[in-house]
Length: 618
Image (cartoon, rainbow, N blue to C red):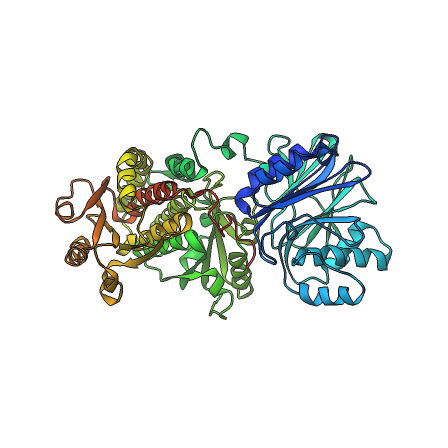
């Protein structure tokens, strides 16, 4: 879970690499480093801390910035604590090879011991330094060029990686490879220059053309030459497929907001519109989803649907379970991908597996997809990033079209994933006849209103700030919901934990009596989702139980609510909607609450400690 950048061409490499690292810092931010080659010497700068700390070091000596080829890295530590020595790039023992690496080399200790027996010494605790020295040893023993040495070395590696390697003796090329971690190569006009990065954001202003390496592929990138792509396993050359980038620079800037998270909360109305745009015609009762239409028989004859995901996407999957079972009457199971992939699950060719991931690169979800496919299941992907690994691994799928999500705490990914799951549920209900035509039409027309209702909700920001100030010093919080809003309680608690570091737990409201009620006292804020749909009276009873034990109640209710207003300490109102779509509204104030509490506590909401945006390692 690190960010890689690289450049080779005629421009000065340093500013391109540094700016790229700033855009990738959401992927890792406990250390950073940059290497440029000035034609004679490798200029290496790296440090514990953020990219701004790296800039402070390089600004001391301008000679560290000169050169038209280089690589950079921003790290989220896996092997070795965050410090200057463990920071990337890493240099081989001879000083000739330099590498940046995202991923984990699982058999690094075995390789390290073998290299030590051959006279190698190591300065860091990282698996990456082991890898660069393995490449050096292969290059020396086989008397081969860098590309071949990397290819042979990687055949001895177990684990996941995206790497970029530079060889001082071959100063006009970079070697790039991937297995399990994403890497993109931007192509300049007439192949005069190339850009390397974990995603396209570092080079979007320079080119719209990119090659995304597939798993098990290696590319040799040379000045003024076409990219050569080969299979690592057999050295067979494959075609480099050039894709046109859909990203634009404006999308990855803050746009006047203080933080990416706040920007992305406010982008949700547009993101939801972009997600359903062209897919539904509410007045005609039409839903168009090519990924579903083209494989409708798989869905209609499925014995069950299994949803696999991690984190916030798992919470969206839980909402999807309610949607699909309610509307289509098909049994649904929701699994943590990290558990599903290891527990020998029972999967048959009559199962449909829906895999959900914002980035499309989540390692555990990718592994779950491969497992499901090996058992004969039909796998449908829901992700945000066009051309991502999950988009390529699944049989079919749907993009959320949320636009880039830079903040580590996911917001618009959650609501757009629910939007896609809503459309799939309605599409299948239409095909199966489990909902009347009038009911489907009503749902579609109601869904069309959600973006404007979120716009209205975002206007209560001042009220949310006031409530946030009251509870910013809480040490524990409880979130309760029932039915469709139980997953929202889980998601609200997760958001608070992620960015404010306040311990919080989400529970089904009825489960409070089975343990959590013991925690209730005058110091325990309890956030209760109590909309007027579903089990309203039951939730009111839960609120009264909390109040009788002096708990502080912050309730999210439907506009016009009277009963809960009389009991709760604070009330936030959401517009009226169908119960199935309430999660799209109830999550908004909880996102704002977590944001404001974290800001009041002085936390870095876009880069919370110990977390990275895209979990591309186990």
